[in-house]
Every structure is written in structure tokens, then in C-alpha cells.
Length: 489
Image 1 (cartoon, one colour):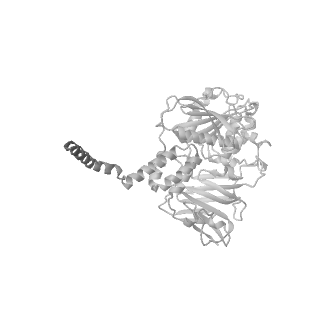
Image 2 (tube, one colour; image 1 turned 120 degrees about the vertical axis):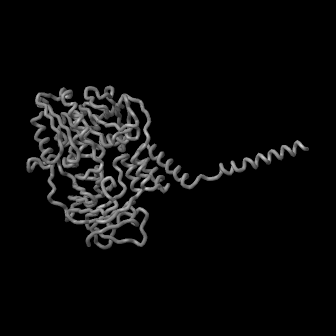
Image 3 (cartoon, one colour; image 1 turned 60 degrees about the vertical axis):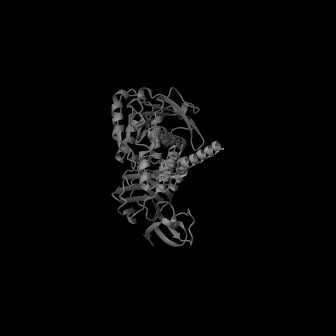
């Protein structure tokens, strides 16, 4: 009996002694600590996403943690943590949005350091017409065209998917995104080079997709190959080449694209504002025998021309929504407007009257110039466009002024938005090109009527029926409840 009471007493004493510990284990963490953990977990999920679409879905979870704008900005600028990877040639593949499978080879530098940001060179091959399928050729090594220490990417084109097609633009974009999710890539030092058909492809990419790339380097290529009736779709705009510098080489004895044929068009680009380092090789044929002599100049050109993720000056022309963005400019709607700018020099006009490329589709163009907090926009054939504003270029403590075709259409302060910041960070996957505020320009005459109750994701109110207005809609989260606009009746 004594023994049983003693055992019960010990058990009760043990339970009492353990009670504080049990209470401590069940006590919830402080609110601040719990929020920090949720933020950390949400960002880890964001960084682990395999595509922009997946990242955008996780971005909503980050917004729901109530993370502050400053904290989100700091994390996005720091980026994901990279790990040690296999070096040498890696054979990879993807399937682009149009359902086509692509193979490509990536050469990872032998001394790859995940803490360091690396330059990337896309090297587009020639002989596209002789390739019947998407299968890789050779070892995937850069070979004789090796230069500075960097990542080399060799994608593959073939007869049904040449460099001068939308599919290959999708492919290059997908590869850039995949590289940034796996390796510590310098987003401002990704360049597109190519030889022969690959050089012609570099011209094409420069006219279709400028945002991810720092420069274009066509070697033994010819821009006017793209004027072929089977290639020219009415959506090639040489004006777009003004946005990035080019390094061009052609040979005097090249039987395909000799200097005397190519040079007038290269000089046309130079004379119309394209930055071109042109190195004609009078004795060279359709080969790269000159590479040992030009290699250092080539690599110095690349090193001296990093991308500005938020350039002060932009021009972009497009004929549809497929290629309607250049950095912080997005053309939303097309159409001739009464206030269109008439004095916009057109690089598509060659020797006063000839057109380089056909104009079978309605096109629109926007030229932007930022000076401090003021943006001057000249437009032609554009009904609406959006500006993505970043504090890297704008002082949000001061008013922002937008002038379109000589008319002030917006002037005021703007607010910071975590939702907008995360949306575009998910899409761009770029530590250096963060935007958190949108200003949408509506340049056409529209009718507006504000309903009694706005749906959660209603379109811009200036496109609804009611009173006539022209102006801008600025919205940090694309919600009409937070719209501010200013225009003329």
C-alpha cells in the first residue's frame, strides 16, 4: 500500500514538474516571429517555382503574408540562393508555349562559383535549312569561338523552326528564365551572337524581343534575308534595333553576304541611330577565320555594353500583342489617333522611298524619354500603353509627370504596391528590373460611366460608356477603387 501511494505521488509530482514545459511547447510563437516564418516560407516557394506562371501563383501567397514593401523589395533584389552545380557541357530541353520541344546545350564555366554573377552568350548556329528536325548536333561545345569566361548557350534551330520565327523567340526567353532559376546569371550581361543564319537570327531577335538582352552580335549575317516573302510577316521593325548596341562582322569574299551587299544596310542602321561596331573583313570568306584577331574586341564590346534594365530612352514598334513590350513600356492597344505624332523618322524607309520590310499589318510605335520624374512619350498608331515604374529611376517622394504627344496627361504622386511588385517580379525573374507601379495611358476618345459598384477586377473605367474623357489611369494594383486619373474633356 505504501509502495503504491509512493508511486502515485511520484507520478503526480512528475506531471506537475513537466506542466510548465508542456505549456511552453503548446504556447504559440510571438506574432512577429510567426509572420516572419510565413514570409520566409512564401518566398522560398516563390524562388522554387519552375516557371513564371508558377511563380505568379505563389506571389499571391506572399502578398497575403502582409509583408512590407521594403521587405519584399529587399528580398527580390537579393534573389534566390544558388548552389554548386555540375560544370562543363549540360544537354537540356524545354517545351515552349506553342508546344514545340527544343534541345539546347549549356556550358557551365569550370570554376563556377554560385556566389558570383556570370555573363551569358547565346551562340546561334548557321545552316538552318539543312536541318530536318530538332535533334542536337555535335557536342554542344562553343569550340573555336570561345572567348571570356562565361556561360555559353547553344540552342538548335531547324527547317520548321528557324531563328526568324516566333517559336525561337519563345525558346530563347524560356532558356533565359530557366538559366536564372538554376545558375547565378548576370541579368544585365546576356547577349545574342550568331554566325551566318545565326547572325541573321540575331537581327531578327533584336527587332522582336529586346528586354532580356544586352546586345546583339551578328557575324556573317544579313538583315535583308528577313525581307524574303517567306519570312517577312509585316511585323519586322528596324526602329527597334535602336534600343541595343550591335557588333557586326562581314567578309569581302563571302559568296553569300559580301561586304558590298551588306554594308549599305549596316550604314543605314548607323545613320539612323543604331549603335553599331562594324568590322568588315575584306579578305574573309563565309567563315570565322578572323576570330583570333577580333576576339578581344568582341569581348571588350560585350563587357563595355551591359544592359540598362530601365533605360531612359526607349523606342518600340509592334503590330500585335505578341511582341508589345520593351523594358518598362507595354503597348496595350493599337489604332490611329487624332493626336498621333507625325514627325517620327522611320528606319524602315531606305534611300528615301524603298521599304526594307513590308507593312501588311496596322502597327503602332511609342518613343519614350525620361528626364528625372518626367516622361515624354511620342506615339503613332497606339491607342493605349502602360509604363512600369521603378524607384531605381523615379523618385516616388516627388510627383511624376507624363507628357504624351505634347500634352500633360498625368501629374501626381503614386503609391507603392507589393501586389504589382510581386506580379512583375514573377514574370521577369530579374533582380535588377523590378517595377511596382503601373501608369496606363488611354489615348483614344472613349465613353465613361462609373457603375454603382465596381467588380473586383474591372477594366480601366475610361473604356466604359458615359462621358467623354482622354487621359491616364494610374493603378498600383489594377483595381479601379485605387484609380486616379487626369485628362481633358
